[in-house]
Image 1: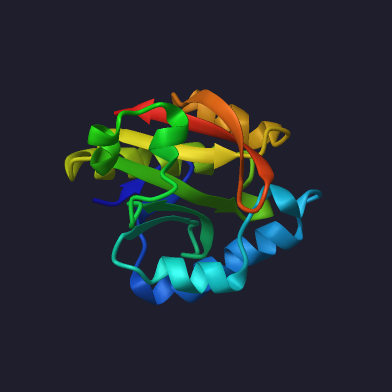
Image 2 (image 1 turned 90 degrees about the vertical axis):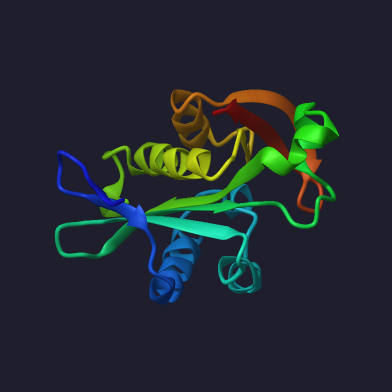
Length: 175
């Protein structure tokens, strides 16, 4: 069910037709980062991931219906190299895990807590379909994302090397 924020953003599950716009948003966000290695994605990964059945995409649109922010959640398939293992979850719980895989916000949307709001929105949706745990990774030096994730109730379980040897904090939240 879409939600409108007090400052006029509409939070909702993204229409599949919006995937190319969301891919463009994510790639633009990455290109504008001071440290692009904090965002371990490329266009091929996005094309491969966002069109899969195990992906849920949530978006925030402004008053002009422009996509201002997006959060992508995934159910990990197959269950190999599972973040649940890194977080210390027993294997019997892995089928109750969803990943918050990506989050991106256009510069004009920053400061409106859209990543935080979309993560909460995704959490409500995912809990209704049986998810018990949310997991995500963040580069240890990416303080803005770490603060946002921690405000959303996630806690860092460990720091490991992922995505070809890049350091990542493994965050988890029981919902």
